[in-house]
Image 1 (spheres, one colour):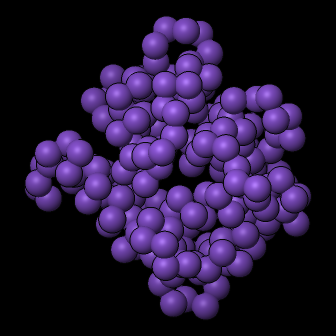
Image 2 (tube, rainbow, N blue to C red):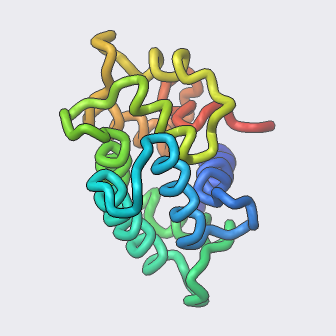
Length: 182
């Protein structure tokens, strides 16, 4: 069972995934995210970046849907999403699952495949998720723990672990998607 804080974070993550705001997560939400990203980057459907991101998001959606879509209607309700998270988040192997999701996010963020995410890559991806109202510079500076101007794969893994597992509100991972709404 999710803690109250985890449930609030699950709701926030669900809202981010539900890009069109229709109350369910479906492939159309991912397609909207891809469309936003393509527009920001000037990609066509056949651009290498567009093809790469489409493949990665299709894989993510397929995996999540296969475990969470209990009624097999090709969409997830908030209840299905929370039940999915509850089914594994406090179990052995959760860290490996969280790291796998973080690796996917990192690969999506690291547009130029240089093994690090810069502030522009971070900002562009968050805008594609519909999070254009965030203070990107402040958030990125919290995530850039070593002050080198970039975020590494290991840092993204740590932030994802903090987001889902930590109750320490001072940890930067708590703000992975911006502040939680009251």
